[in-house]
Each structure stands twice: as C-alpha cells, then as structure tokens.
Image 1 (tube, rainbow, N blue to C red):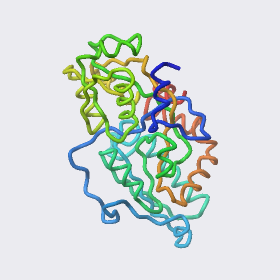
Image 2: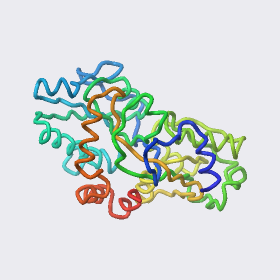
Image 3: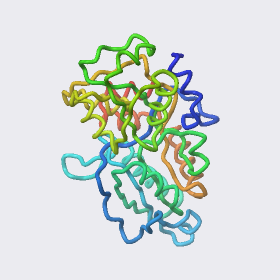
Image 4: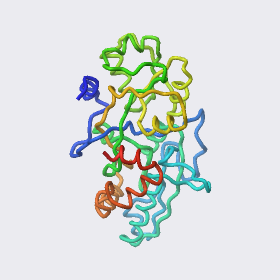
Length: 308
C-alpha cells in the first residue's frame, strides 16, 4: 500500500462497504455536466422521483420503473443508431427482464438523464419506490446511510492526471515541488474531492484548488496545458487518451480499493429484488454474458483492467 493510499483510508468519505472484498477503485461519478440540467418529466417532483414500490407493483401486476442516469461513455451513452445503451443501461434492462420472468410483472423502464452528478445523487436519495440510479457510484459506508446499493457490478481505479508535459511522479513526496505551479480541480460531492483535500492536508498544504462540474470539464482543463491537475476514474482517463488528448497518469497515486453499485432510495423494497437478480446471474461479474457486455462497450483491454 502506498503512502497516499494509506492516508486516503483515513478520509471518512472513502470508507469501504462492509462485507465486500474490494479489489480495485472508482470514484463512481459520471461524465459530462452542463450549466443547467434537463427538464424533469411530469412524474418527477422537485426533490426526487416517485415510482411504485415492489409491493405496489405486485398488486397491480405492472412495474413502471424509473432509471436515472449520468451520461458516460461506455456506460450510458447513445449508440450509432441514436439509442441509449452502455454497460449500466443494459444491466438495468437485464434486471427488467429478470423481474418479468421471475415475478410475472409487466416492466417498463423510463430512462431519465441528469448531467450533474451531485443533482443525480441527491435526486435518487430523495426518491421513493422503484427508482434506480446508474452513475457509477462508489459503495461506501457513509453513502449507505442515505442510499440502498446493489451488489457491486464493477471495479475501477482512481488515478492522478496532469498534462503530458508534467514529468511522471516517482513518489508523492515530489508533489509540492513538481505540482507547485499547478491548480487542483475539485469535483464537488465525489470521492475525488476527498482525495484532493487529503492531498492538500497531508502532502501539499499550499495547494490551490477550484471546483469543476464534470469529468469532461476536468479533462478539457488539464489537457489545455494551462496548469491544472485532478483525480479521475481510470476509464475516463483511458477514453481521453484514446482520443489523443495530451494527458499523463501518475500511477504512484493510483487508489485501488472500491467498487460501483446501482443506487436506490434507502428504504426501497426493490433492493432485495436487485440482490436476487445478482444472485441469479452468479453475482454478475465474471459471467460470460457480462464479460461480453463489458468487452462490447469498453473494449477488451479496459474491460480486463476493470474486472481485476
């Protein structure tokens, strides 16, 4: 364990979920964000969505479910035909098929996007009934106080990213000198915000930071070469490098200790049904159908990295 990983374990926001064996890490946040989010559909009150509970759905024989998502390349995005697809989108569609087959309900899935991750998170927290969130949310004990989680569906790695002109760090002790001219980018409400604050408190007290609203903004500002750096989930970094952006990963700061889960309102009676689904699919991760799904949307190399 690196010195950096060791002091991250002391940050309350990055506590690990009990009972899980965690092998790799992710902040669990989506990609693009804008100044204003999309208009909410009529079924969504200002503070959250409302959909039938599992008990109510059984009584009616129908389950009109809401899936709230943060657009994210590979996970929840529009394919070449303009249709919504991706790893987490298809995972929820498979869940819908499971509910139809196993519980005899007529399931419909209403996918509603939200580009601002913090808004997405709060809206699921404040929702009721059959509402599910797919925004690559890291499972933590702190978040279990206000959300229900599915079993983990993916591992990930959080990494430190700069412009490619910044020499790679051999040790985190080099940060104050090597990054002395750089400004840290904070992604509010995420575990990457915790990481940046821990870096400032433990290693680089003079660090200046500014907030950003999305991974796209973070990547763009770092790639500009105008003096920024930040923490990012490795799949976002990977995609940006594949697109030819001039970025550098500082592997000495990699944090490999967390997993993603689908989120639901804390008291949702759909959570046990979601657990049934994972059990019926042998835990999802490592099964042939899920491996094929990851390879299709993420590519073989990245899929292998994220599965550990």
